[in-house]
Length: 456
Image 1 (cartoon, rainbow, N blue to C red):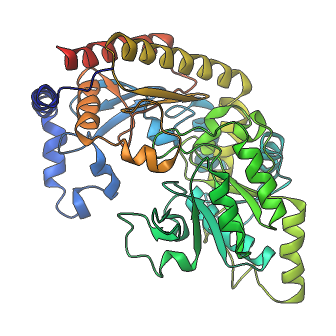
Image 2: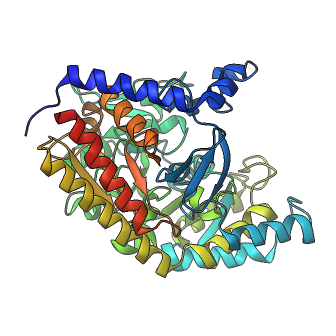
């Protein structure tokens, strides 16, 4: 394998940046005029788009996005998983329209029958028997962490370096490479307390580091995805997840699984596909078809530990310690979840999505091999992602070290200029029920063209 010629990369990157700027004058105009928005965007991470300014949305449907300059793209970003059901799927739109226009009452702080249906569906998919709802996976993680601390009487959680569980203060932690303690992740914004007070960090795929953290006896829960996904896909090695379950049980900690991204593994996520046994489960984004939502599930044992404290008056989960805010569990989000889970993200849909992701992976592998690049690709069900590293990273730290901003910018701009959108945070592609084999083949051809240019 031969490294990329950096001087050639610089020339190609400038060409793609120039082409991007020339093709999107209206997006640039809107961006420059957004003087009342912090960072010129409605949410600061939208500045992650390569090219100096983001695309501005005009409309989207299924696996297609059209920007304000009239360009239509095959969308493999899908809202960084939020639109895994596709953009505006018909059953979801029908349910939302009925709730908004026919029934009324978008939010009333009153339950609807949809909530029990969704709870039963989540139990069928992810095994946990008891559910509650939020407006995002971040909110679900925040509250589930508090419940874990209440249930166990312990103060800390264990997370893995370069994990991602939303903007939860306790999760921006990494292991200190010298003394093995816990440090704040680089770039963490104004943590309220030193992260070592709330968190113990461990290294992904390293059970020894997990056990070392658990030996302190103060960890309420191990919070993890079944595979790291926000630093590139870093898959678990054989026996790692089983080892986490065993260690959690041995040291009296709960196992808390966040499948907000790894839901791509199948109809029941990795939890069902890999026979995982969580005590607490968190999911968000995709289950509402684009309507803000999140959910957390509890085992009977965790629920009984929580109610033991509430029955004694030690805690109040109805008023003082309530979660989610006024809009959590609202009628609109529950209607969207019921339609999306019941009619869009079906077992049959996942079968087709996973087949397409396999074809996507094979196309990328062929391009990497043809041009002898030191890159790799990992697949997680309907999701695939290539990294500028070979062999594939096995820890979050290795994945972070493989970051290459210039290659990232080149690949994203080059694909965008050829009508393909990849996730702006990384090189992830996600399939939705509306994705077609022709979309995957289009990416395969564009990938071969773009990486071939690096070789001249």
